[in-house]
Length: 110
Image (cartoon, rainbow, N blue to C red; front, top):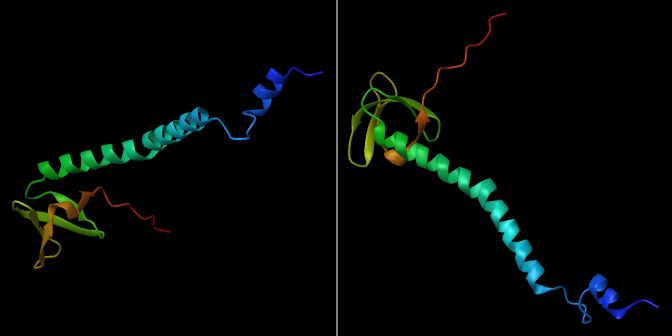
């Protein structure tokens, strides 16, 4: 005959409910994994972008959030004056800057 203690260890509690402590540990592990995989990288990326926006000055080539390329021609408290064409200037919020312009990709000629 099988010992009742062994059956309890294998089957859990006699009422059929899973142990509460185990599910709390599992929830904690899932949250920890979620934090380090998703939240932490987003925070560091946002901090780098905020540092970049603070250091921008007139003459820097930037990309505005919907994908507009421009050059900063004026800096204000909460906004930039950005030239997007020879005679076209836009006033955009500093939060609309998504990054600096990199070198444009060269297309191969066939």
